[in-house]
Image 1 (cartoon, rainbow, N blue to C red):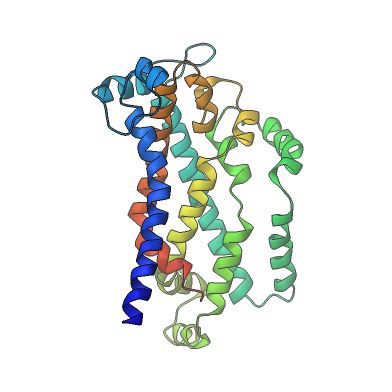
Image 2 (cartoon, rainbow, N blue to C red):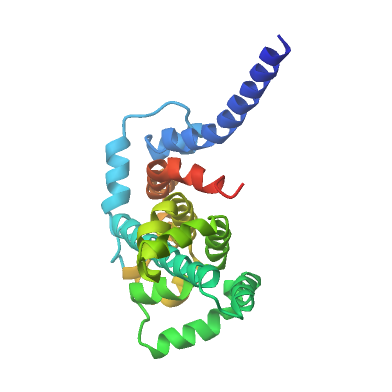
Length: 273
């Protein structure tokens, strides 16, 4: 009986937490389906209205910005491309860096790892000027390469992959050598399949990191063509309804990524425990 009460209490806490998290987003969504006059006079609405398609079509396709050259749909596409690029490059480089540190007999392997890891102490704001100077000299201003590559290195992803590789038994490497596998074949045929859950977890982390970037894109872009989600919010200054709809739409890409990769994400998080 005590166990039943304990489980019931735990479920009650979870339901309350879920309610607290979901209700604000539901209020934003429901309010975004009403007209501006209703929101201005009656406040936030708990029930949906009948202007869903009109409001969301206007937000997605109406041109805005200082020169009316950009739409929200293009902004979402820019952020999605940037987020996928940052996540993909981060995962690939971190995988290979961790592989080299763990499996190649380098005397300074630990030193190299800590040099990589210590970059976590260097915030993006501190390296804005030198990074911008390099990208500018390479003529990468107002380009996806300039937006993606300078912020794609991830020390935290390298750390997680290193810890995961160190948990793999040495017998796996020995058996691969007996089968005639070279370093590249061992990495592709053995380590990558074992790393898929960790890859999914790191991809989600880095996708959200790239998707939510504001400071770097605002410095790297001088035209509205490369505006990202956070930058595009300034387009929605005219109406609360438009802002609510924009917020809901901006949440869709990361939510879909999390839903699609959630099973591997959870396994990857608990894989090192």
